[in-house]
Image (cartoon, rainbow, N blue to C red):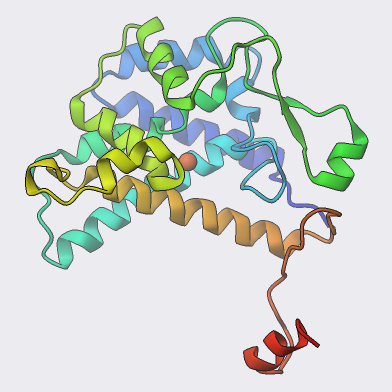
Length: 246
Ligand SMILES: [Fe+2]
């Protein structure tokens, strides 16, 4: 069995995303961006990653992921606030903007035939390595953040400092550049508010959710990767662990 979203779900997700975008401050400019980049169904059909066991490497995976990060970001905000953490220094609207655009660069660049991910025509790589998509050779190598900022620039969309940091820090220290923000101890250098932490928690939680969902569906074994499946056995974890070495 394979994890796939239905056509109805893909369409509904996209309508929900567009409705959320419209409600943001820069609604008209953002709607122009989405309408322009959607010409080839790019946004609706984009995956969130290229390899099966990363997360949401399926048609419609991008929007599905973005909506999940949006939901988790707002829930994380409420949770942190309820625990008494300081929620000043940024606006909830900025968090919404960052959540909805944190992976924008995964759509590629403006223009035709400039999507980032293309279906991998090599059946061997799809079957044996889970590489469902490949990177479009038409576009230059860039970081995802640079592509995101270029897209904003191309469509004349301004962003606030908090929105920029929220988008930049979503990957946490999975992006080594972010160490410069997270791995600091001087009070003067620490993040001035919590938008970056909340974005990272939300993105990590959504990616993990999507990975676990894939695990439930996948029946594949990859030659180069041992993928543990959720255990249904009644043996204790210690027994499972010792089996690895027997
Ligand atoms: Fe993400």
